[in-house]
Length: 494
Image 1 (cartoon, rainbow, N blue to C red):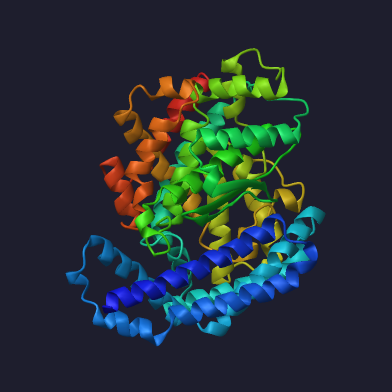
Image 2 (spheres, rainbow, N blue to C red; image 1 turned 45 degrees about the vertical axis):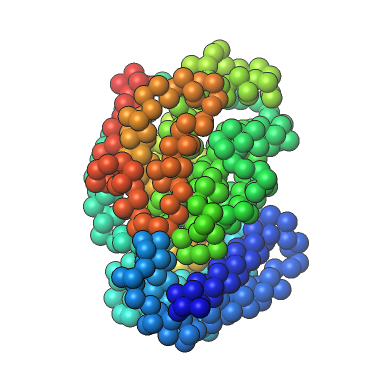
């Protein structure tokens, strides 16, 4: 076997073990008994030690040194790009640190869920303080400097290669004024009616699974379960998603499902030839979020598709108190004051991300102590949204991400929205009569366009390259902002 073949065979096993670790995480958040938390933490630490040892195995460096990237085809060169990058990051992080992060964040997930249920940030703060310290240490090891900006960028690079905090600051500075102005204009107008009543949670799950199939999610290679915080897990032939239900808010379940289906379909659509290799998963979280957000919003909340969903909702729940499909469309997209990011409308969603971006950078830099996080969150939220946080579960305890060490992840949600704005513009140009399909509940052409333009490539291209190739021009926040102003301008008669 050549050095390349030996390396790829070794990498195949490493990727398989990483998928097993992911399955442990899915189990922990769905069906694991509460009493198993400490044992699961040790299991996570053990498998992380194995993965770290494989990623830093001296044989990998020997194989890489023996491979002439120029002699490989484009797929082979892409594989080497990912492996070299991952090896460089892994070799800079001590094994003891990697395993302790895995152990602590496994335990912390359950502690966060309990603190959230009890609205008790003080109970969670000590473990979060330890996580922040460990992630700061990890970022410094990768960046090989203690400089705060570089430490945060090193963590961010793990989710969105090639993007820096400075890039995001420029993007957010361009987005904020137009978003704030649009929100103010909409909230000055009479609010559309929302749904009211009780909605059977079993019926919500049945409709959620129907929606998943409508958007192309392959249930033979996936499943839909319930979790405190919706998420997706896995790649290739085993891609699982979760959602949640609220008897008073079926949109929470349905649109969380469509969002996670976007993630799941991306993973299921990657070229099977890349399975259990570095190319066999989504190339970045920003690109991943572009898929989940375009499924959820530009497709799922469109006037055409919401008309189809209106009929399915009436089949499932009877009279919704909505006079017609237009009223339902306004309900699906109405702006309202709310604390929860995952329930936020398209106009306000990115403002939630900007808040988290600034706070997590302050935590990593040491400018914000964990003990002061709750008050800092509450002050910033009231300044940004104009009303107070009433309890921690509606504030700094609402998201799972920091409890599992995902610092640098939050801004990829907003970046995904920007990517989705460009993709939607390009999709509409390619499929000008798409609304006729959506009105019939047919997503095949829309998801097919995304599959061919983005999803099938997996990690073959760099994140920005795959988006810019799909949209045919440089990435810009303008298409997203133009789409929002047009859509909500018509909805609110601006």
